[in-house]
Length: 175
Ligand code: FES
Ligand code: FES
Image 1 (cartoon, helix red, strand yellow):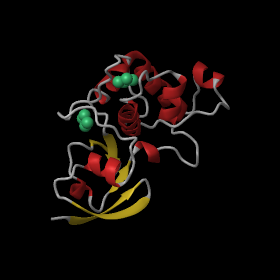
Image 2 (cartoon, rainbow, N blue to C red):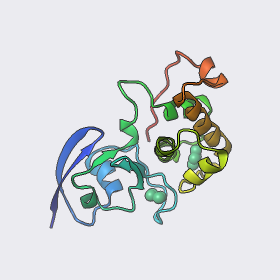
Image 3 (tube, helix red, strand yellow):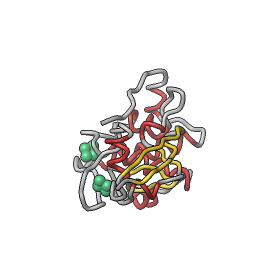
Image 4 (cartoon, rainbow, N blue to C red):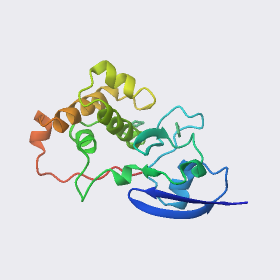
């Protein structure tokens, strides 16, 4: 038996009929075709599936699609605006905040949420804010650097790295 859902994903209303047991992450990837949201575990630990629901970071493997009914979901595909990367995406690019990139969409969504809550987090606050996200490549230092750099950029400053790369074209993070 399916149930109707209507949710806004990256600014677009979408209506479907889904099984009540369908997880939001599967809905996003398999029904909506938004494969930038990754699945990295089956224990709700890795954070690769992080999206924003009504502006709040949520692991999309831990909620059912029907629970997102009537709500606004933002995925990694919806973070850039008019072809311009979100400052966190740009900072991950500038600061080499990824290796294999599998965990990256989740880290970027969690970092964007963190910086929305706290524009100038300390290193400890960055670590706490990202503790629900795992990188199996163990590249945490550059991830932290990227968040610091995004924080600076969002507060009007620029970093060495972002100055070097002004004008360069960065590719969006996808699967
Ligand atoms: Fe959701 Fe790992 S896939 S936390
Ligand atoms: Fe490879 Fe994080 S960059 S898992």
